[in-house]
Length: 278
Image: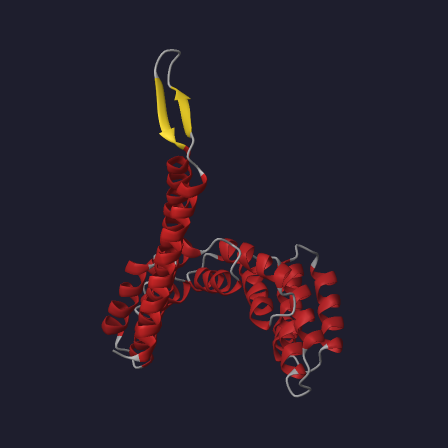
């Protein structure tokens, strides 16, 4: 027998000896009996030493039970942690496979991987976005929107942005515009959001709003090489807005001339003026 095992047995024997000595001591000190009245006439008599001993044993039993329950709780907690980690690892690996299949346009295989994840967790955002993206690649925008709407609570920026872009692509401009406005409140300098607001407002013929967001894009731009192109787009928006106005021909021509002076490099403004004076 190994030394640690011998030590354990010695400790167990010493503990047992202590218990026996304690019991003997209790009996030695207490020779009296206690009387318990069950009813007015029925009584129960027991040695006081026995009562103390029973109370002591109950205390040990309760302590042991609590210790066992705490140990069981810790084991269950550890099992739960291990189970959650295993589940997370499984989902993560499956998602990576799905993304890889989607990247090489193996859409059926990618869809199968994403559906495995959704079967485990219906609200898994990356897997649902992947499913929506697969539907978009298949040009099934209705399905893509349906998938993304299930997880769009208006709080997750990535989900809300993808939902807005899908609706814009499906020409649901009013819905897309509402979503872009929510996104703008969260991140007012996001270029994708600003471009979305310009596009949807133009489609809805809200030219003043489109011009406002295009001007913000220009003010945020840090690349001097991109500014001429952005300003040209702003000029075209202003031209569209002007042509949509119901104003007299003379006033329209006058304002066109002013617009041409302000944006001399805008070919669409020049073409519009040439068309009118030909």
